[in-house]
Length: 244
Picture (cartoon, rainbow, N blue to C red):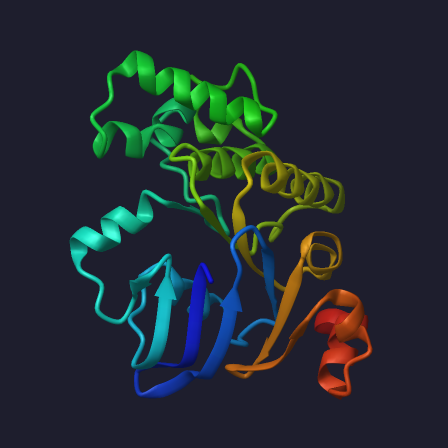
């Protein structure tokens, strides 16, 4: 398994946010964690990428124990993974080239010509051209999201983590980002872990889905299987989304 989670507990300010989470993600899967706002899915994602330390249980990503990971190992892990943030998290004072190539410049100390080449390749993969020297404020919301995905691709990661990738986008732009995520998954042979409340992502991209609510995993399976779940919340959520 590329990610192994067993009896994971995470507390914030003494409040238990994640309650004995158990999940396994296989290499090459598109794994979607679905749940309404406040269900704990973002805390789960932050635990996987090393931003929040577990209080108990086991969490391993690519064999690294996230409970006791060293600074060096965390750095090594982050070179093998990519993160697409909900708000794209671009540096406003940097060009697209500088944003996408930031890690290559800061951590690998590559020459500018090589950085530019790799950044262009990543931007081409997400369908963007002629934006290298543009500033984030010159881009649409959808373009900024694509730049965020390109930045995640630069290290050619084994795992891409997505945090609410369609949040704040209109229906048409959202659909284009979902299609792009599917394309990237196939072309780069990545394992994807996607945290979202967007049911469209679950139905179109997921090899496997985990439904989280109130810090607990209520069920896992394929979209079609979960639609027939005996759990009333799961059935209601997948049919009505956040209107519940």
